[in-house]
Every structure is written in structure tokens, then in C-alpha cells.
Length: 157
Length: 83
Image (spheres, rainbow over the protein chains, first blue to last red):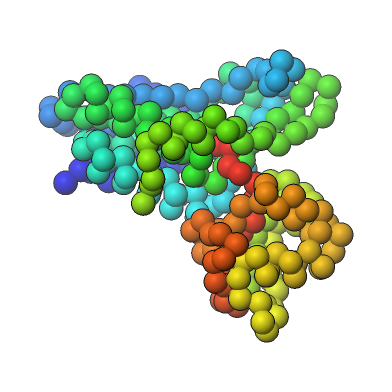
């Protein structure tokens, strides 16, 4: 039985090294750790942005992330998963999301990581709003490409 | 019933949360949306682009056909953009 996933929604930044150490502490059965770190880009549609605000649906967010993590653990036989997603006010260059997945071998760790971020982007209730250098603000549109990436993995129960 | 609005739906409605008494005869998400559009110009504007509105009932994704009751928490929001 895999360890339950670590699911955290927070405004504070995360430290990648600390989170990897937490995930693997005391274990010698892990063969590899896949990681994805999402970062705030400084431009959107070619226009410079000065800030990003992340809104979420407290309660449903954690529930959706737990479900996504459980699916990944079962499907790729992962030994552990960490999902940390930031909310609130962020600036270009700031971390947004951390995905870690560990497994005995690299393929499961890497595929599990890709599955987790693809599904998170289409199923977890977060919304981004960008503030541009000219002072205007706009909610980020969902990308058709993200839905297509998630569909490649098939249906999520 | 507890209603929640997020992102630009919240901005258009004017608040993120409200309690309403579900009128008799309204039993699905689609019927609820039609009724809500008559509550204020903001509600009407929020739901004007129905193709861009997503819904969750009691924190699970729902569809226009999902059955609702007066004890449910129903949330409306745009397609998600996290990650």
C-alpha cells in the first residue's frame, strides 16, 4: 500500500529540496523521483505582466487534488506523491505548483508526474488572473491544448 | 441552498456566496441557472456565456442535468486554469 499523497494548498512558497527530502525520508526502496515545478511567466500573449492572482475553491480543491493523486498512485504504482499549489498574489518568476512522484523505476515516476500535472490543470478548481504592465487585468482563458493533454491519459474515474 | 461563485462569475454577480430558497419545481442545474439569471443584471451577465460556465454540486463536477435539492452547495465557475 502506497503512502497517502501529501496535498497542500498554501500562499507561502515551497522549497523543492525540502519537499523531496520529506517524500523520501527513511526510505531505500525508491528508484527515482519525477518533478514538475510550474512558474509564473513574465509575459502573456506577448504582453508583460506584473502580477498574478490565484483563486481557488477551498474544500473542493483538496478533494480534487486527492482524487487525482490517488488515481496516479494506482495507475503508475507510485510509492509517493506530493502536490503543492500556491494561491493568492504571485509575481513573475514565483513558483506556482510542485508535483513530485516517486517510483522504483524512472518511467513510472516520469509518466506519473506528467499525468498529475496534466490532470491538475484541467480538473482542480484554480483560476488565474493576470495584471498587465499597463494596469489592466484579465482572467486567464482555459487552453484547449490542456484538455487535449489530459484526454491523452483517458478518463479519470 | 448555498451558492458559490468564483473568478469572473463572482465579479459579475457581485459577491462570492449567497443563500437562496430553491423554488418549487426547480430540480436541475440547468433550471437553477435559468432562474438565477432573473435575480439581477449581474447574474444575467454572469450566465450569459453558458458554454464557459462550469458547475460543481457538493464539491463534485456536475452537468446541466445534475439533480439538485435545497440542501446542496452549488458552485459556478469558469473552466479551471491552475497549474
